[in-house]
Image (cartoon, rainbow, N blue to C red):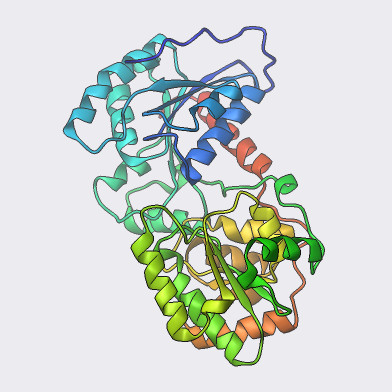
Amino acid sequence: MTSQLPDADPGRPVRDGAPRTVVQLLPALESGGVERSTLEIAQALVAAGHRAIVVSAGGRLVPRLQAIGAEHVTLDIGRKSLLTLRQIRPLRALLQRERVDVVHARSRLPAWVGLRAIAGMDAAARPRLVTTVHGLNAPSRYSAVMTRGERVICVSGTVRDYVLRHYPATDPARLRVIPRGIDPADFPRAPRPDADARAWVTSLHPALDGTGPLLLLPGRGTRLKGHADALALLTAVRGRGVDARLWLPGARERGREAYLAELERDAAALGVADAVAFTAPTDAIARAYAASDLVLQLSRKPEAFGRTVVEALSVGRPVLGWAHGGAGELLRQLQPSGAVAAFDAEVLAARAIALLADPPVLPPAIPYTLQAMQDATLAVYAELLDRPRG
């Protein structure tokens, strides 16, 4: 059932021209990068005096969305079932009733539902359609819907190249590269070394206590994050006489017990079990970066952006990773010494030793900020609304 929404508050200040209503579509509001970007843009819209509505199946982030002044409508538009097509009519009714100016689709099935809902509206009242390609999904007619927006936001140059390579009919003029961004205040530059942060880590995880460097690979408990590569790297570094330790926050995850047991067996077989901490994700990730000497980004599958690279460099910690996908793009631009050809374990180990022995000079500031991402996205909305269709 569709929630009833209040009228936009005419008393709110509007910094970007006339107040607009923007609806963002995604499957749910549980967790993840897509959800985080949704909340960040909703926050920017509200701050600018516009109206932000999110349509999803709901989730634990709904209260946070509402706390920033945005609104939520519960429609299950992301469930992979033919029954989801029933949501086209309720969504269309919402768009008509709330006089929505822009629909921003962030996922494939919600994009199909949104596209059909808009197509059934009177041409003069149709919202403008924006899509964001958040990931490097397998090319298909189903995935191609993400290129159907009047503007298609790509979260990195890597994604833009991917879209043009696999969907050559896409007009490049409709693409806008808007990298994801961080709030530098959340990832402040830390002293190197940061003795207090390292003491905090070792108090929580005794296996990380030592005089040698700390390697950090944050990532969910899936083999795509490259945990096995990190264990092999630790083995190689320790084999060269360096008392390195490895922290894998996020490797311990509910439902992934079999994978964790596999990693623990691998660590024991490699002889590094006493120098590794497999833990649940940490809420103090900036402090984790500060405690480390080298941050690893070893995803086996190319990622669309590579937020870890930006976060770690903002804190002032060098990054070492495979030079593919968005992470490779960021490393080549911001810290070229950290980019290693994908899956070349020998070069990875040699580069780790070099970076630990002689840490590189890092950029004094990271250009990929949350404010820049928010401003650029709102500018895309304004660009569409300030010009006729066609």
